[in-house]
Image 1 (cartoon, rainbow, N blue to C red):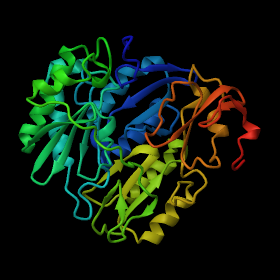
Image 2: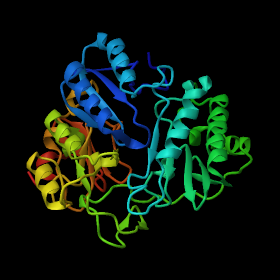
Image 3: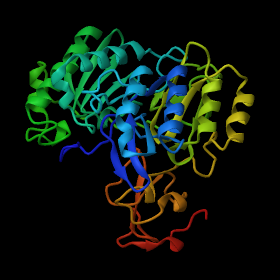
Amino acid sequence: MPTTVDACPGVVTLHPARDGHVARIRLPGGYVSGRQWTALAGLAGEFGDGDLNLTARGNVQLRGLPPAAAAALARRAARAGLLPSGAHDRSRNITASPLAGLGGRPPLRRLVRALDAAIVADPGLAALPGRFLFAVDDGSGSAALAASDIGLRRAGQQVEVIIAGRLAGLRLPVPAAVQAAVTAAQAAVARGIGALVTRIADLADGGAGVAAAIGGSLGDQVAATDARLPLGPIGAAGSTVGGARGGCLPETVLVAAAPLGRLSRGQATLIGGLLRAGEVLRLGTAGRVVIPHALTPAAAVASLAGSGLLTSDSDELAGVTACSGTACLRAVADVRALARPLPGLPRTHWAACPRGCGRPPDADLVVAAGPDSFLVPGQPTALPVALLGGAS
């Protein structure tokens, strides 16, 4: 069962909700093979309500599960390669730059796999809580390094180490960087992560002891960059993604988004059918799905848009996300029905309680104060939803 400092669901440990129980399946780096994607859709249909819910960290949640489903779900997930260690069920939280390895960008899949394997190989790291975050970045800044506990950023042939969102003063070869990340995580657990607090920055020394454990020291804060990808085909030479200029991506790379982070089984099947052989889907923040596909861009966009997916930044819900709403026991409003763009707030996350679960790091928080009133940035008191403006 979740501890007092770790209420995050997993596959082995489900979380109760009004619509049944919730399972969260970790996908390190947000990478999903075609076989795993098919398995995820099958698990959602067999055990849950049929939908795939995409999280802000590139993981997938299944909802509407019966409480007794955990054991069978875990067995099926393990067979699909989605649960390599039951003990580390909630420990494998790794984000990665979603366009890494495409269009000449540095690849990260091997580094992510090595880090994931190293975490699973260490029994002590099973104590890492679900909120603890590793981030692996290709140099673009699009892996949310500033919000990470332990970050690895490619810098040519070396990797820069980040602790609690701050530079640690270390640049190492890949194998040494993976070991440094594991050593830092061990030091974090030894200092109370998972027992007293969930994030390194919340330790009494802010993480200085963790940095010292790997021979580093806390330096400057890493700049927070935009991790939300633009929607549509990505092929413009010199386009700016994640705060860094990229090379020319092939136009057979398409970014789509699940409206309010939720995919139907039909939409998931369609996405899986577009995936180019030998490639993986990449799940990113704000419901983004990066699809290396084999169609012409126009055909891929038409197919996805026709299914109700978001394929353009001009789509009404392109900047809007929401928590699970009334499905959650804490909810006080049906935010999924009310979520909309608001004037002056191009990116909003609608939350049914003050916890703000599922909020992308770049979104303004709109918090329910009651069934039809909300606290909005810049307003001192809650406003009735009818006065918020925006599309209805």
